[in-house]
Image 1 (cartoon, rainbow, N blue to C red):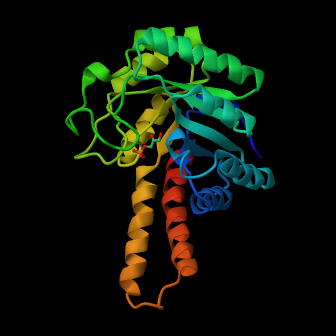
Image 2: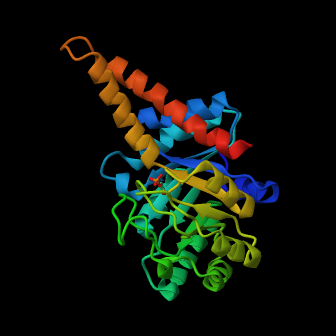
Image 3: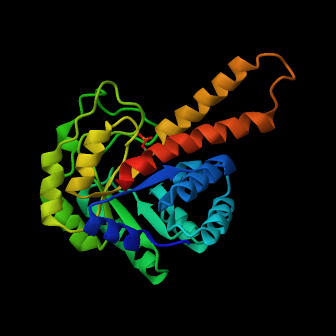
Length: 284
Ligand code: 13P
C-alpha cells in the first residue's frame, strides 16, 4: 500500500528502526525494489531524484510505483529526492508522490527556512510529507567539494540550528551531514555520532542519512540506534547494475549470444540482491 513518509518514520523513531530509500529511474530499478520489498515483507521507499527529470517523465515513474504499491501488502512511499525547485515539488505532488524532499542545504539558514516553510505549506494541503536538509554534503552526482575521506567539519549540521530549522519549518524529517557523502568513499568513512546524538537529544523529528553506499554496516546500525530513521542508497545499486552488465557481456562475448531481454533479467536479479542486503540490515 502507498503511505506517507511521516507515518512510517514516526513509527521507526519509536522502534529505533529505519527504512531504506532506493533511487529509481527506470522500470528495472522500480521492479527490483518492489520485488525485494515483497520478498522480505519489508516497507520501502522509492526515491526519484529531480536530476532524473530529463531522462524519464515523472508521471510515468509515479504511475508505475503507485500501481505496484497499491497491489502490495507492504507499506511503500513514493518520494521525491533532492528537489531544489518548487515547480518540481508541485509536479510531484500533482502526480501522486506521498513525500517530497526540498534541498536548500546550499542556501543560508534563513533562505533555507523560508523556502522549506513554503514547501511544507503546499505539501500539508495535499497531505504529503516533507523532508528537509541542513548541513552541506557533496552533490548527488558523487563529485566532492572537499578532499574525499577528509570531510569538512564546518559543513556538518549544527545541532542548535537543526532545532531552529525543524521548529520553524515544520518538516517531517531532517537530512543531516555528519561525515556522510554521496558517491564512493575513498577509505572508510567515520560518521560523527556525537553530532547525531546532540541533534537527536534536541528534536524528536526523525533524521535521515544520505550517502549510505559504502558506510560500514556497524556504523549504519549505530546511527539507526541514535535516531536515523531513513537511509538513502543509490551509488551501490547504480555501480552494481553496471558491474552485472559487464559480467554478462564477459560471459557471452559473441554477437548473438546475449540478448537485451536476458541482460536486463540478470541485472534486475543482481539489483534485487543488493537491495535485499539493505532491507535486511535495517530490519534487525
Ligand atoms: P549514495 O549514492 O552515496 O548511496 O547516496 C544516495 C543518496 O543519498 C540519495 O539521496
